[in-house]
Image (cartoon, rainbow, N blue to C red; front, side, top):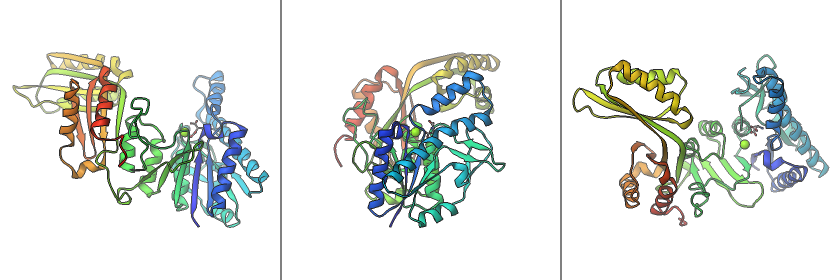
Amino acid sequence: MALIVQKYGGTSVGSLERIANVAEKVIAARAAGHDLIVVVSAMTGETDRLLGLAKGIDPQPNPRELDVLLSTGEQATIALLSMALEKRGCPARSYTGAQVRILTDSAFNKARIVDIDAQRLRADLACGRVLVVAGFQGVDDAGNITTLGRGGSDTTAVALAAALKADECQIYTDVDGVYTTDPRVVPDARRLDRITYEEMLEMASLGAKVLQIRSVEFASKYNVPLRVLSSFAEGQGTLISSEEDVMEQALISGIAFNRDEAKLTVLGVPDQPGVAYRILGPIADANIEVDMIVQNVAEDSTTDFTFTVHRDDYDKALRILRETANELGAREVTGDNKIVKISLVGVGMRSHAGIASTMFQTLAAEGINIRMISTSEIKISVVVDEKYLELGVRALHAAFHLDSKK
Ligand code: ASP
Ligand code: MG
């Protein structure tokens, strides 16, 4: 008998009919002989509605009180799902985060889980009950209600699975798994059967957002097998696990992309110790996140320095960089906020040469100019002009045969 943690997101519990559908799925899994802990989000739109109410009183609501308010969304769904289960003859019991004792730090609105008391849950499971736990919330040392940040129910589910050493953590959502790329860009995109934690982290941080990124980090740290599946369609979904568990590794798992990029360049800065720091220090001080960084080899006594930021931060970053360039006596500052980043992701890259050259050849054949390149062990990213995003992603998807079945 396996212990499974299932998590159902807001759309999956968005109405009483959908809650009934979840109850049926839970009962079916139990009939298959599994012990079950079910984590639920608030009904679709409920967290936003509550947030709107709070902001109607104060645009910057008191963080402690905001968590008291937001946590009620999940409290409603745990009760409703438990009722639906009980009505169908399935013994169930609901728990808020505080009732479980999901202990967090005291960072209201973005708390981190510190510890989970698994004792009560274990005792209840032993009595044959299905446990329904509120996602997204916990309690701090002093007994204050906390929440884990938007999308935090995924993390609750993974943390419970880790604490109870569950056999699998299943995230039920409105898509049926993780895809090779965004199907809206490539209609032939294929659902992946398996992907490693590392690849998923690269894909998620690059915009393929299916899961709260923190939940994947958590799953990786505690080696919790994580499965993404649809609550509305049958299927095996995508299993996210450690590299050792993935027997046959594809060369490339997916193509991620990021539309909201901008790049800035400072030309002709003196090539001296401390220059990178002088350029990026003020950017960091302004809370602007920098992604790629490239510095040229100095030909004379000066060098060029390029970095990318989120497009929303472009104007601010440009202003700061102009000031710094002045102070440093640099020749010129240029920038472009119509660029995108496309990344190939795959642990198979570790053991295969030639992937980068295939990537560059493919882009060249389409007449796409590459503006920046960066690589890591399992990822190659290029920056190209915005207008080439769709063309580039489609060409690469075909070149690496991501649409054909393995
Ligand atoms: N209800 C919360 C949100 O909307 C948490 C979650 O759904 O995971 O962000
Ligand atoms: Mg979610």
